[in-house]
Length: 191
Image 1 (tube, rainbow, N blue to C red):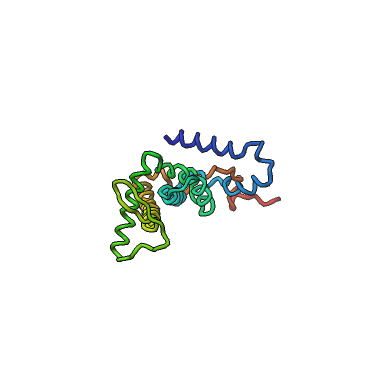
Image 2: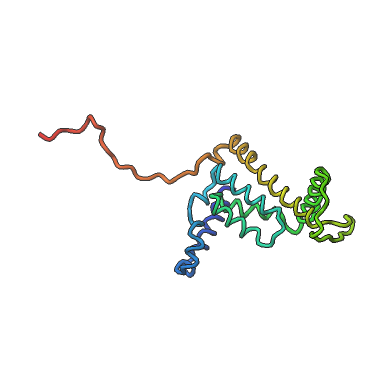
């Protein structure tokens, strides 16, 4: 699985640095933060941030979730591939259950604090659910995104504690050539 991940990351990295795009100034300014290598290598902290960002944007009903997650991961120094991949948690099969859970969560918060739905928010009728207020749904969307993002950190840290060789604390950096310096005592004084 690690080999497949690395293959996918390398392929995406090369596609973003394609020679036809590389010479364009606007593309370089837009993608310069993407090419920071540490945002592509999995380590505990960057994966936790990337997973939190991906889960947050994954439950929000937007069309370009992956794009927003990638931009947020760049800005917050999270792992970009994880942030983009997790947004696919919501897909045409899982959207309806996620939306029903968000509507339920919004209704629970509204009932808990005894809040009346705002008048300016529109209401719409959904079969088998009844009349739904848009503001209640949005409260559920934001709350579910925040809860999912906060759950990412303990999950990643627990996984890293159980399997530290799969998800290290720090990214593995390439070994650099070290200059061979003789010890201080072994220097011969010029005679």
